[in-house]
Amino acid sequence: MPPYIYIGGYSDPPRIPCLSLEAGSGELVALTGGPGSGKSNLIKSIAGIRSAGSGSIKIMGARPGSMRAREKAVFVFQNSNYSPDLTVRNQLDRRIALIRGVPVRMVRRDVADWCEKMELTEAAGEIPGQMNRSQLQMFSLAPLSLTSPLVAILDEPLANLSSLMTCSALSIIISLLEKTSVLVMVHGRSPLAKKADRVVCLS
Image (cartoon, rainbow, N blue to C red):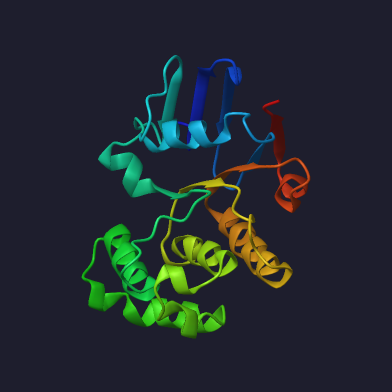
């Protein structure tokens, strides 16, 4: 079986001259670096949103952006990507249904239960502009709990979170490690860097 996450000879000069790593099931690998270190460009390359340039990137042996890669991976970007004129609950229902490949009606109960568990039921009924950044960031983590990804790629997943929500987010991410390969991009002082199996410094 190929590595769950494979990055070979990736470069993004002058930020990242060369990066190679592999991660398998149950591994948490942290890439650390400050602003401008290339973390955001790298996650876009892994997602297939941006050309990887030189080097090779594979998710479960599939190229970034391919149908197979999208079926196996969940991405959490630093800036939540929600439409401004629909409730977050509505958008989350659709997102989870799309990932699972089922009708929206089949996920509504699970999404409602997750929102209740996270104490976000009231917030879920609002549009993004009516809630704070901490709430939006937590909603971006919902697919990690509500789907069964084999690969999770996360860019600063604890950013903007309150101390209470940080604990909840950590629990969500750590619980993935029973079967998921997690690549997380964080600042060096992030609690996730301390829990990682490996830490790779980008700058």
